[in-house]
Image 1 (cartoon, rainbow, N blue to C red):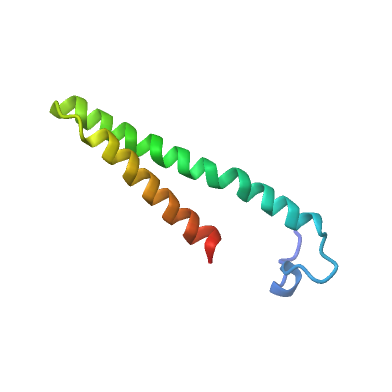
Image 2: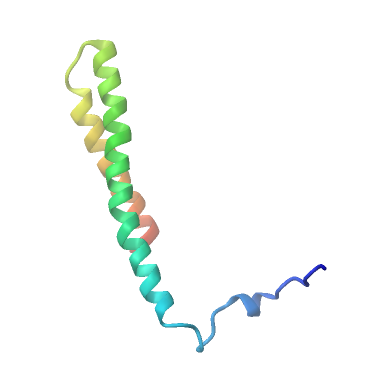
Length: 82
Protein backbone atom coordinates (compact mmCIF):
# COMPACT_ATOMS: atom_id res chain seq x y z
CA UNK A 1 0.00 0.00 0.00
CA UNK A 2 1.37 3.40 -0.98
CA UNK A 3 0.85 6.33 1.38
CA UNK A 4 0.23 9.75 -0.15
CA UNK A 5 2.95 12.35 0.27
CA UNK A 6 2.49 14.77 3.15
CA UNK A 7 2.08 18.42 2.34
CA UNK A 8 4.44 20.99 3.84
CA UNK A 9 1.78 22.11 6.28
CA UNK A 10 1.53 18.61 7.70
CA UNK A 11 5.30 18.55 8.38
CA UNK A 12 5.27 21.68 10.54
CA UNK A 13 4.64 21.19 14.23
CA UNK A 14 1.61 23.11 15.34
CA UNK A 15 0.68 24.57 18.70
CA UNK A 16 -0.26 21.10 19.83
CA UNK A 17 3.35 19.90 19.52
CA UNK A 18 4.77 18.01 22.46
CA UNK A 19 6.82 20.19 24.88
CA UNK A 20 9.15 17.25 25.50
CA UNK A 21 10.45 17.75 21.94
CA UNK A 22 12.23 20.93 23.09
CA UNK A 23 13.78 19.02 25.98
CA UNK A 24 14.89 16.27 23.61
CA UNK A 25 16.50 18.72 21.17
CA UNK A 26 18.32 20.41 24.08
CA UNK A 27 19.58 17.02 25.26
CA UNK A 28 20.77 16.20 21.74
CA UNK A 29 22.64 19.52 21.54
CA UNK A 30 24.13 18.94 24.98
CA UNK A 31 25.67 15.69 23.72
CA UNK A 32 26.55 16.94 20.24
CA UNK A 33 28.54 20.02 21.22
CA UNK A 34 31.21 18.26 23.34
CA UNK A 35 31.34 15.49 20.74
CA UNK A 36 32.13 17.98 17.98
CA UNK A 37 34.82 19.65 20.08
CA UNK A 38 36.51 16.43 21.20
CA UNK A 39 36.38 14.78 17.79
CA UNK A 40 37.72 17.88 16.06
CA UNK A 41 40.64 18.04 18.46
CA UNK A 42 41.27 14.30 18.12
CA UNK A 43 41.15 14.22 14.32
CA UNK A 44 43.26 17.29 13.65
CA UNK A 45 45.57 16.53 16.58
CA UNK A 46 46.04 13.05 15.15
CA UNK A 47 46.83 14.48 11.73
CA UNK A 48 49.32 16.85 13.37
CA UNK A 49 50.88 13.99 15.30
CA UNK A 50 51.25 11.90 12.14
CA UNK A 51 52.82 14.83 10.28
CA UNK A 52 55.15 15.47 13.24
CA UNK A 53 56.17 11.82 13.24
CA UNK A 54 56.67 11.79 9.48
CA UNK A 55 58.52 15.12 9.25
CA UNK A 56 60.48 14.82 12.51
CA UNK A 57 59.07 18.03 13.99
CA UNK A 58 57.22 18.71 17.23
CA UNK A 59 55.04 21.75 16.51
CA UNK A 60 52.30 20.32 14.31
CA UNK A 61 50.58 18.27 17.02
CA UNK A 62 49.60 21.25 19.21
CA UNK A 63 48.80 23.29 16.10
CA UNK A 64 46.53 20.48 14.90
CA UNK A 65 44.72 20.39 18.24
CA UNK A 66 44.15 24.16 18.13
CA UNK A 67 42.98 24.06 14.51
CA UNK A 68 40.60 21.20 15.35
CA UNK A 69 39.26 23.13 18.32
CA UNK A 70 38.74 26.27 16.25
CA UNK A 71 36.97 24.40 13.45
CA UNK A 72 34.78 22.52 15.92
CA UNK A 73 33.77 25.72 17.70
CA UNK A 74 32.95 27.31 14.35
CA UNK A 75 30.80 24.30 13.46
CA UNK A 76 28.99 24.49 16.81
CA UNK A 77 28.38 28.22 16.34
CA UNK A 78 27.17 27.68 12.79
CA UNK A 79 24.83 24.86 13.79
CA UNK A 80 23.49 25.99 17.17
CA UNK A 81 24.47 29.63 17.63
CA UNK A 82 22.36 31.34 15.02
